[in-house]
Image (tube, rainbow, N blue to C red; front, top):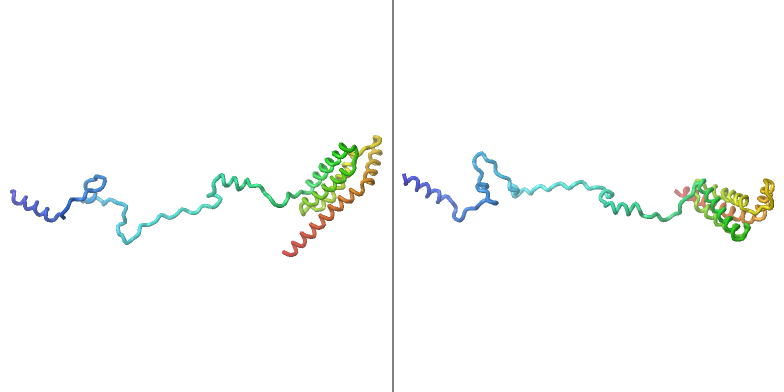
Length: 208
């Protein structure tokens, strides 16, 4: 009875390799040696060391605008525009001409009680700005809006000797005749600038 048992113990001792037994990690007994009917656990290492592990595919690159932070986008969108001045349309040119000419006439009337050299200089500045800032499609609005604003300023703010429609018409004609130099100077300046812009734009189109 004892002989066969001792023989099996000696055989198992001979077949075991010398040294201490390895214990499975995390104290899990029997995890290294799978039993019958039990699938081997995946330890994370590749089965074949010659085959490199597969790398995860990188995510699709997002657009540059999407990768920017909200603060960056706000700084980009909120950046002040510099360069060419804003262009005026035909209606905008007329409105600016009337308001600016009336302002110059009102200041001259308030300071000197008449429409003299201050009104004339203001009209020249207004004509220059209109001719420079009007857009290309509405170039003719600059030399047309100036004289209309000039006449309207004389009609509203020029001193009149007597009341009545006839007195207003006579005062307007007299004012235009006395201030014809300022009127023609401002209108001619606007016409020259508009003509120069037209010729330059035509040359640019032909060169293309």
